[in-house]
Image (cartoon, rainbow, N blue to C red; front, side, top):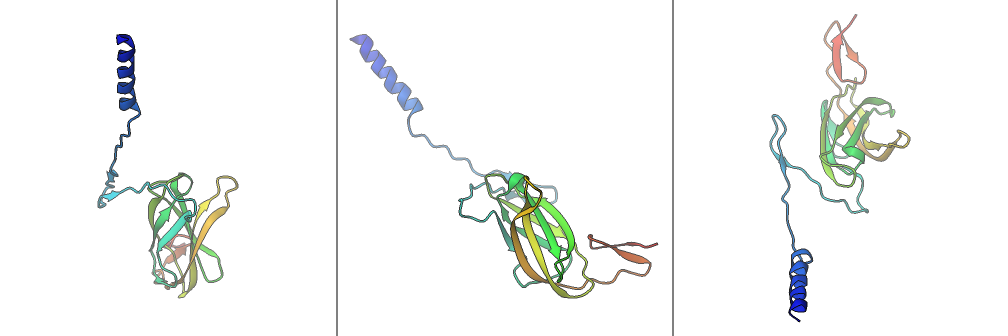
Amino acid sequence: MKHLAFVGCLGLLVMSACGGQQTTSQSPTAVKAPNAVATEASSTPMPSSSAAITVGSPSEGELISSPVTVSGTANVFEGTVSIRVLDARGKVIVSDFTTATCGTGCRGDYSKRVAFYSIREQQGTIEVFETSAKNGKPTNVVSIPVTLMAAEPCPPNYVHREGTGECILGD
């Protein structure tokens, strides 16, 4: 009988140690990049009904100049967020990418300064998307209609480098 009582007490002890409701909370880790203010990395699981990519800036209809800061949140493969600036005809002026603070199953923040060159003020579009790992095509595309400000012309003896927003010494 003493043996049975001992086994019962031992069982209760194990159950309370292993099966009890214990909660541990971890606070987000602050990450500090060189020359940047410390920020908290977002790793909140994304509800299935949320968009894969959101764009917080620029806003729809905004008049933008180069470089433009494109920012928002994303839950995309490996956190890779692709960005394109298109002119009024839909031609890609510049293509770039950045990495969100979290990806593949969690929502992370992203922000990228993108330089572009527009010879005149015109309607344009900022496209933010995920590049499909399956076929390389854009997926989860978010299009933001904007107005592109005309860039200052390149100085004499310089030419515009296509797709970069830069003036380089010409031939």
